[in-house]
Length: 447
Ligand code: PLP
Image 1 (tube, rainbow, N blue to C red):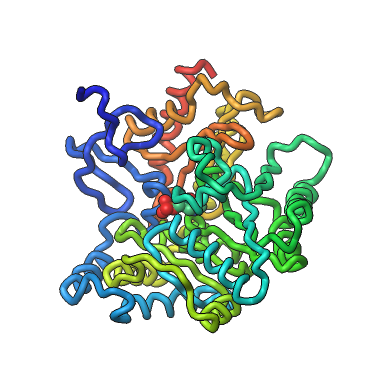
Image 2: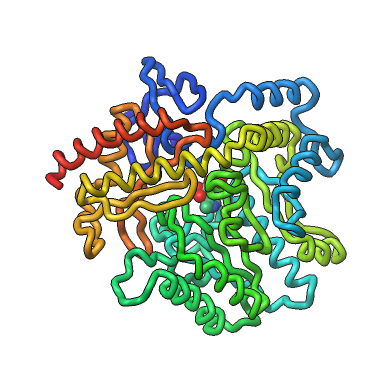
């Protein structure tokens, strides 16, 4: 029987190989039981923003554990949650200051959609319930978040059980072969939202959800600047709420607390998680415009909540994480080291013709492999490049994250997203191991 027992769920999703057991982790490094060291070049799943075993966070958690680890939210307020909510609100655009804690990204996305819906009902707009999303996209694994997710790989097995939401293409402008400039392409993709709202009937559309810098679905996709402002205008034109899923891009990873800041966009609701708890505790937040929250509270309150939400231990960890980010200018470091890493990755294009694109912001970076850079034709699926390169890197003690996105377009992309504490020396080590891994892949696949 034992050989058909599926591997434990915490293994790398791409691999059937068993992974070694984790022994310990510190800073950007992790060690397995045999003593082998790995550079965490993807911060896990873009989570460990401040690195592993940060002494300040561990001390804050220990101190909180000695006081209380849990107080149910209907029975007690708690100081770490209050302080964290104040700190988060101070880092948001003005007015976007109502913070609702959760324990992960899917919960944050679901909370955003449920708040939006209750706002619509409370303000006499009960006909609005559709949330338009993009494909490819990833918004989480629970049914509500999955209904928005544009990745057939994730949704197909559950399709009879899902109420799938309308979707428009993500702005993969780098793949288009037309005579338009990038900015014009950005406007063209944004225009697809307007067309979709009209097709659905504006009175039925509640919101539009997007990752401002894409995560694992698109591989750090950044749209041309024109896209962001136009999307905001279109949402305003039809009274559609703009929801930014910053589960991966938020909490400083792109060099600003929200990726939205790069374009001066004020979303109506933001979902945060991953780097917000930074791997110390399960933590996320839905942050909403007070103008949405007030009518919901006036109508009797937000009919929603999770048992572990806002627990003092998770909030104490999150508070120490964000203070660590602010006090050590880790967002500035993410911008500087991210620029260096991006230019090093871009430099690889001269050496490897099968690297088709390098993209991203701050330390949310990715590169994509192709069979032909001119046409951006993907490598054959049978090559399994997205698995093979990760394996070569893993053997050499470098962890990177990959996907061959299905739903929309296919392509092998690799996220290189070390913790925001990474130094120039770490970039050197990542590049050395990555070059050796790419050489091994090129030899293996005859690229
Ligand atoms: N949204 C985005 C953009 C994500 O990248 C993820 C996770 O990868 C989620 C939502 C879901 O987060 P979680 O796995 O914490 O539920």
